[in-house]
Length: 269
Ligand SMILES: Nc1ncnc2c1ncn2[C@@H]1O[C@H](COP(=O)(O)OP(=O)(O)OP(=O)(O)O)[C@@H](O)[C@H]1O
Ligand SMILES: Cc1ncc(CO)c(N)n1
Image (cartoon, rainbow, N blue to C red; front, side):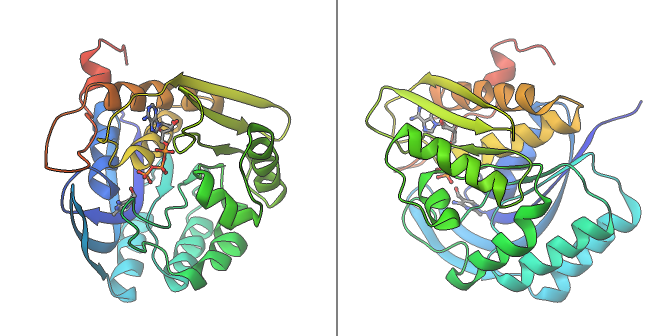
């Protein structure tokens, strides 16, 4: 039996809703074998982030090489990378091992405000990693920091997606999860030639912890399975929509989404 394989390079979320844990659950639900490189351990629950403990550089490098020397992920995603040093090592590994299908979720700040990417690392992300991306999936605040633009309107989101492609990503999605002005969650994708919109009804819920991680992990899993980019983005949207709609009701504040929901709905893999 041959199995599709995906790698996530991200932080651990002890609460299980975001980060490495969300990624591996999503890979599993989409029928893909998951591997991980852990950049930082976070102490986290549905109330917020109580602590961030970066893994020492030698440990990050060793994990990257242990995978690269032996395994061959069909697609790779990055989430919380924390520092410029980690970003440089990840970029080197991506080049050294020829990981072509790279999904960058430029995680910067947790919903409660905790810093998951040091401010001085943003430039390294732009210079070193972004040009290697098959796709980058910022939310609006992240797209603003990456492009230097102020983004309020749909036209500005389109312009930001176009600029991210001009900066070197092969494709960009600017997500609309933070746009409370409409009752649709509209994501804008630019593939270097044209724009595509994926939209779904906005669900009124506080339980959206890990939506961004889950979404980018689903894109990664679909790319690993051989999907083209537009199909991968559409499936990921359906996956995260089902996961938000069918929340688990776990924890006291911002609960996780339901990674089981998409498959339980009868989605055919
Ligand atoms: N309330 C919602 N209802 C429906 N879809 C949503 C909602 N919130 C987010 N989404 C969708 O979930 C996906 C992830 O987007 P979001 O903007 O939440 O990412 P994010 O801010 O990076 O997440 P995170 O806070 O986990 O980092 C997008 O497809 C977005 O449109
Ligand atoms: C480890 C980790 N990665 C990403 C996010 C963003 O949701 C988070 N809260 N925690």
